[in-house]
Length: 358
Image 1 (cartoon, rainbow, N blue to C red):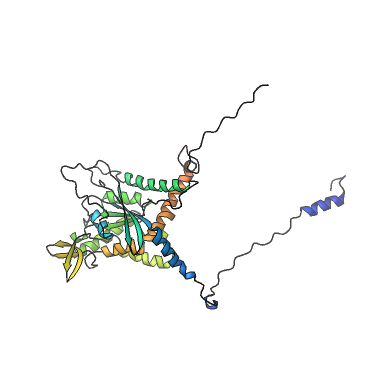
Image 2 (image 1 turned 60 degrees about the horizontal axis):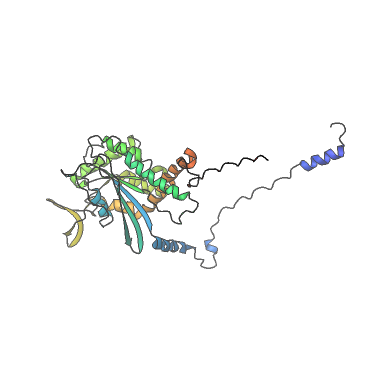
């Protein structure tokens, strides 16, 4: 103890500095099921009906992109999927038409209503893809378009006075059409899926599957799956995004057996055994589009619309968009040069007035 300082005051000061013991943080208890002890009906199960009513009022967006060289029946298949003329047919280029030098992006919007539920469907077509003599980097305009839609959503999201419901133009699903060669994937197929699988949900489909025998189709599907695996290409549903064992079991079956879907599209009806069916007429008979013994169109339709549509939207928002958003906010302080963090152009800082001499 140093001289000149009263001991009593020092001891008092020391005692004041001793921190009081902190109370231990409360540990939340694990939720306990008390269903058996409820004294009556509460009504928490009505949340599903509430959500249904809200969806019926507002509707929802679904944006699907189709990619593949011309002549593979992309427009016909999409029209068959949604049982309406939602995609314009652009068959092989005629002699009078010039093949576009670059890939074009054409988006057409429709509102489809079924059972009181409205879906704002946008079909994004990519004419010119794979139709050039040199198809090097022809995937770049498509990747650019996909990222532009993420950017539009991000700018709306960071506005101070943002819209109650941000228009969603982000691509939720990309159907990639594989030519039914029966041999192997083209370098262009691998290059496209390798780059785009990182930014969008890709679902590979073998087009015009009726041109192959059942044995050829089965072997080709296995070969495509193997090539994708060897090249490290993940298609939707990606293994890493399976949420639980039930998801994993269901999706493993799709990944190992169904993918890529071997499909036939048609918007023409024929009479078969007294029923009107969608199909393609051949010299050997009618190929029924929705008959699983003839092709896997029904599996693709159920997968995209009836079982995984909501998940396609969630993976787009929670994985692909979040990856883009995180990168943009990391780069350049969050938004393009010249813009503030909240997406508004910052006004110039006024100059500080100089004091006047008296």
